[in-house]
Structures are given as structure tokens and as C-alpha cells.
Length: 347
Image (cartoon, rainbow, N blue to C red):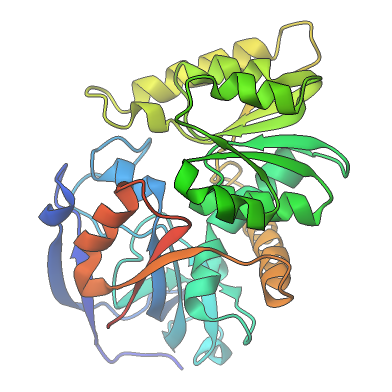
């Protein structure tokens, strides 16, 4: 239904480049939903690598401080604005919004909503909202790895990496996944061959497992290791970089490491070895909004169907109440967890 009734929202605010305990809590009345908007009651949101970079002012193209973080969210529509279908009210959806998810209630564009199957709980759906789309698109749209291929997933214990491993195995692709030794058994259970990322000869160990090279490497680290990821590829293979974790603690201009990375990847595409290098940008193509939303909705729906069918099991590292968002962020940054830290409304 259309709403003119104020909704009281509790929000977690990132006031500047602060430590996790510098997050602030704000309570305010949300404005009534505008044209094409809905009010979403949050049931699950999460901590991604983006928020870890944003709190350091290191995320490419992040908004000015202060703002409410929260890259993706799952919740129930409680009110609709003019131009939004009133039938959306009472239904549960996922949305990828870049910022704003760390709140009890928030305004969302109706066009960004993707239905969540009844049999998939909110925290599980949240775990694949951005991570599942990222993994699906990198594997099937960017690298286009075929059944029978072999790939390397750096950070196979992470939010994106653990989904990527499962999507690849479901597609009949062999996976070599890097993780710390404590996570190797779980990586094996997901179907990948684990390699210790702390081992000084990590790349040599991967090479022994795939002496003829691999069809794709998915690298979220960037930095000097990117060259070694490139060298793991067979002729015709694809390197997909989707982050620069190695530079997250570097001081200075947040855009500079990303621009250097872009330049390197672009140059590699002109080498006469049949290999290709790409930077995966979740928001690429958003200028053509209808096509972007259609692609995102279709890909997320595919992943949610696999989750509902039991073919993909999202890894939830912890469920943390919204009031303890600082603890959730610190836990995600500890590099000790397997999967994604999810924020829920209350205890």
C-alpha cells in the first residue's frame, strides 16, 4: 500500500575513515517513499570487502562521509510509494544497493528488488545477493569457463570464493582453491583442492596441480601477485581480477591502485599469447539501467534456485545483531572466518 506514515529507522553510520568501533548509531524517521520506491524492513544485510575498504576511504567511487554502509540487503516490503506496485507489500526481496543496507528500515527502488524463494531464509539469501551474482557473472559471463575446465580461486574460503567454488563444481569444472590451512577441510567439502595461501611456494604448488596451465584464475588480491596469477593461465585462459585486497592498508589516493591495476590488465590483452585479462565491475553497464537490472535479476534468480535446490550452500560465518555492527565488521576483517558475516535485526 502507499504510505504517508513515518517509519522509525535505526541506522549504522560510517562517519569517516574510522576503526570499526568508530561506527555510530542513528535513529530517524524515514521520509515517505518517493516515486517508484518502497520501504524495506531489513531481515538480513552483510559485511563485504567493500565495507572494509569504505571505512578506510579506499573503495573506488564511494560516496562522501557520512553515510550508511550495506552493499546488499534482504527484507520485506512494508510500504510502497507512488508508481510502485502495491502488491509488493508483504513480500520478501533481495536488493543490491551499494550503500544503505545497515539499517532496520530503508528506502529502495522497486526496480532493484529480486524475489526470494520462500524456502530460502533471509540470511542465506543475503549471503548470495552480491556474492552470488559476482561469482556467477565472473564464471559464466566474463571467463565463460566450459565443463571440464580447471580454474584457480584465490580466497576459496571467502564470501565470493566459496560460492564461486560451488558454482564451478556444479558446472563440472575442476577447482583449485587457496585458503589458510584451518579452512582446507571445508574447501575440500565444497569440492576444491586446497592450497595454503600462506605457503611461500603457493604458485609453484598450484602449477604442480595443473602443469599445463588453467582456464581461469579469479584473483581478488591484486598487487604483485597478479603477475603470478597471469602466468598460471594456459594459452587462451582468462584472468579475472575483482579487487585489490593487497592495497587496502596503503595510504594515499584510493583510486590510484585501481587505475594502475586497470592499466596492467589492459596491456596484457595486447600480448600475443591468446590470454585475456579483465577487471570485474559489478556495476558495469548500469547506465543502461533496464538491461542492467534484468541481467542482475536473472543471474541472482539462477543462484537462488541453486540454493533452494541444495546445489549451492552459502557459507554463513556468523549472524550478528545490527546493534553490534562494529563487532561484525571487526570479525569480517579478522581473516579468520569462512564465508560471510551477516547482520540481522536483533539478537
